[in-house]
Length: 254
Image 1 (cartoon, rainbow, N blue to C red):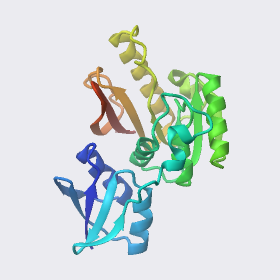
Image 2: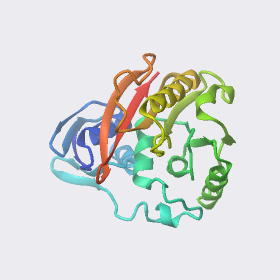
Image 3: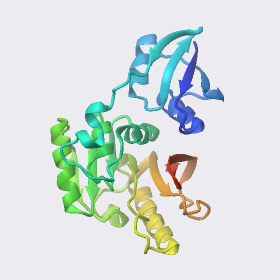
């Protein structure tokens, strides 16, 4: 069956990529409309659409069959979480990062902060694990997960550049993260590149074959030469935040 999707406009290629990941198919895009040939039943199609972050409406034969409901994230906005932090990620972006991994069972965020991605993954029914180098952030993650009645598989203190010391190799289905690297203006670009490469090398060790890493990389870092050659790059997408801040969302596969 042919369906058309009205996409969210932050990055239309990224929105199309989320549709293709969720529905396991290839689509064509013209402007804000993606067209896909789907085999899912109407009920299953709506179930998958409810998971999405970047689909606004779905049509079949020009008849609307699904629409994004306003207020979906209201109870999980940063100010609604019991443990707040000003850098806390908004739920729409967290949901999108989780979706881009294609995870079916479980996910890890090795820079979990206050747990935004883990909350969205837990709402979607995934088993969640999180780590952070700052124990105060881990306490906030635990508080937020408990508030949203999400029982994590594992929350632990770890240096993400030494991830394989804490996790078995080839054991993880998916990893998603927004590393805090680069928030300090005193960190040189060279050191930043080394930090990102060290972490991505560790992520590659613990991911299963075909497992995905979805990572946000500061726009000031050039992608060529940054990503370990062992990864296959599935996509790089710019996400405008505000002013001069644009994030690079990179999807990698082992």
